[in-house]
Length: 188
Image (cartoon, rainbow, N blue to C red; front, side, top):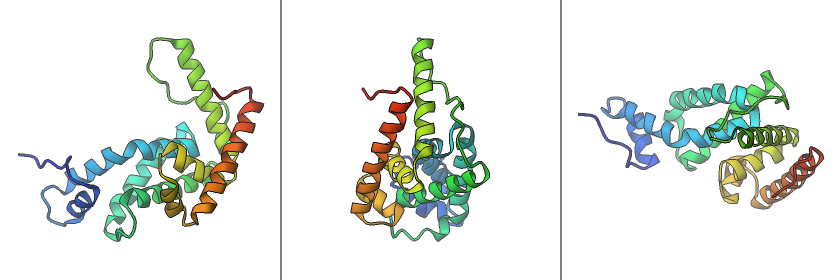
């Protein structure tokens, strides 16, 4: 009989995943991965592009697995995970420094190929525009808009004051709007 861990909190899952002889150790870690992978992937995709995002996500969870014992719990697991993700993204960008504008994003299943093509083009343009922002703005905007973190959580992940986060996000949004407008993209 398998161990059911889906209902456990992140803190409980971490405790089980850390326990050396826990019967539910693997299931607990797999649940953490399933729970957090979509947001990690969205953040990675926004910072490194579709082509490198899968590799970054894999690197993030390998690193998390290796260093889970070092997680102190001073911050929420999600906060720590976003910091690990950012570090992995920037390591990937050192190897592959820019996201090509022509990179085609992952297709979205749907019945209207024209609409799907337009959505893919918009995602490619947004990925390109985000890559043009200064690192601090790109990081703040991605954490807020793509990962859905609160301003306070973004401040914690980035290790800066709340006012600094608000300023970076505002400047990033203004710059994105200008970059996208120059590409013919108009906000709806």
